[in-house]
Length: 205
Image (cartoon, one colour):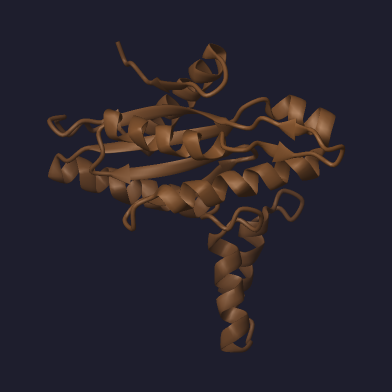
């Protein structure tokens, strides 16, 4: 039983779907969209992108094809929120999501992983391929800057962590989606330590 005080929006939607509450086809579609997509960015929410991550990792390990994760975080998140307000940060996050969605291939998956990070799943991509995608995203993000109400320009950018499964990697029973996303998160933390607009490839060594 789900504790109502701990229930997320996705849990509430799932519970409503399971209850069989009657409604129109349009309302059912709206509920399904709420269950899968993040309301701010329009990308998959954490639960939905996690499902796709599991599926793509299983496929990569079974077929022994490469798979890369690109975890992107907005640079200077704390300063932007503190100095310009949460609404400005949310708008920048929306812009970032739009850029990510523009550069992803039809068979890539993009979702909001947490409050300020976007996860891009790249089937068939090696680490260098993921780095190339990051460079295109970063180049687009750095054009022009963000116009502030006082007329100033806020430089915006992203950093990223990359974690990959190589094409020649043998199937490892304890290698799972949680491990891969943890590697990407560690790589993103390292990238942010390196400074703005940085990308770091997780090294298991």
